[in-house]
Length: 334
Image (cartoon, rainbow, N blue to C red):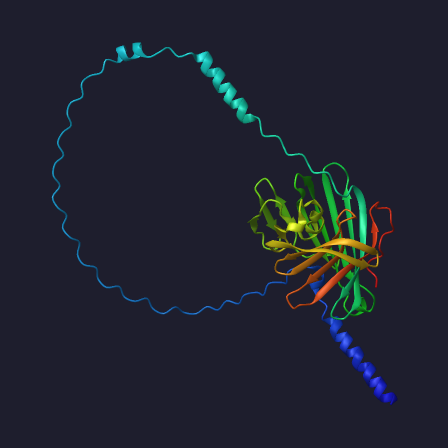
């Protein structure tokens, strides 16, 4: 009987270990890595011999063009006397007025008031739903200094036994400005296990383009485009998120148009408390679901990422520190 119990225990440990090793970067909400294409060179079949073309048809004889009739002479002196005198001063004044009108650029739309002022942070536990257990933790921090700029950062890492078996840590950073429609990112940075992974992105709103570090490509982007991190906090600036919309999203190595759908209001329970939320779903190459607290500055209190394999990773808020004076979450150790 004792041997049977030990065997069952070992089998359970093996099953859990296998499941834990199945944890991958889907927990970060990123699209999967693209599979490299393999090229094979093959000799082309010989080209068919073209048939000889028929000889050109003879051209018809060209008839001579008759000479034009002589043009009578023009009295240039009389023409000049008939022209009205030009007012140089008036012409110069009109030109100066036109140049001044072109030099005045249209007024810039005023920046929207920040929903979150100052600094703050949100801490989460990360649960893999297929296991029904906590596998990690996450921390979001924001800073709106009041000069029209913003800075967002997030960290997600495995913890506990999972961190011993498969240590993973990823950090996202988004920075930019507040404009009339909300957040306008200027840069997006990614660190994996403390090292750059070559998936940064830089936005150029003067040209409406983004440059991806991964392959150096420059892509046209739609107005209002966000990055993976700013997308979560841009939801607070949407006029009617319950009606849904389409948002461009830069994910470090790609640019997609996400369809944002509203699944209605929900009362949810988290370790940080009970919240009245709006459940939103952003469908792209991966599926992102966000529950924003309608009575707490539309902060994300629950986030779920579902990858192409169907694995879901849910972040549940455990603490909300809107003042930004709370303790830092310990990081880097299980």
